[in-house]
Image (cartoon, rainbow, N blue to C red; front, side, top):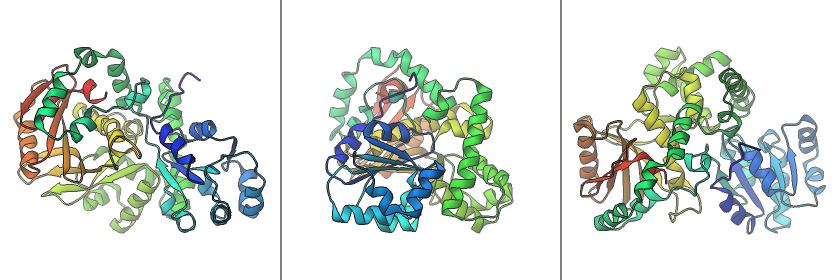
Length: 410
């Protein structure tokens, strides 16, 4: 298949199957879960099919007991809640690793029957939208995690000096990044180049998520149009402190209903709530896939927002990858002060902190530089990187660096 790509999470899943009886892969619809299940499974079953779902729901013990070629891949298993107590009993009696690999388009913890059955019995992985390095079939980006882990400013200086100028001029990376800003990273959608077909795919997918999938988690009387409109408002307000009052005014949905809906959207992998630090305590929202955001906003985001949101979608994966370069996944947050300092997102693990700022100018503005210095004042042991779409790499001060986009993606 021309759009088939090796995913960075694949080695972690392979390792997990060697010592856990059940492995789970969750994520947004069309993010590539089925392809992974088909790759790792000797038996593949999708519960999106009515007949299979009925068998699994009516007699789950018999359904599970019929398999003899493992691992068994059970796709979209959240559609059959009775299956999970049966899986729990199966692995209680037989703890052999690599028996089942499950996938779901909702967070398993959002459904009580699934959460209670699988707690402590599953190794769970979240598959995020494809990164630029996956699109280009590069190894997972390690530049930023190396800076994050560096113990001294001199170590970072040495690392920057060793960078190849050729890497900063990688035309393939540039094309992939531009594509990711427009089309996102969901393989089931982003490879469709015909604009009208892509729009139809987005509409069909959103209808499935906002009707059938959403009803699995939370019942609501809101219309599909209203649910989609709320999601579009969140897409327009990405990276800004979440104001329920303003969102309620714009969407004409009550604040209690909005809070319930936003919780559900996060459980469906449509959005991610990111906490704020500094003087702002309200969380900010990012859509998980920027192609979906572009569709919902009708491509009306300004250039800096497009650039920043695409960086968010690409850069977070190495920091939040289980069994990745870090000892444990790093937390993510945004930094804001009353004086106007603003760092779109930052990563934190223990005493290590790395702030990420974006600039469309080769020479960062006073506002961007001021934000970086405020961040470093708030986190004296931290580092800050300003990413721009040019080729210049520069040390701007102790623990403050200007880095080309292509370098940050390698």
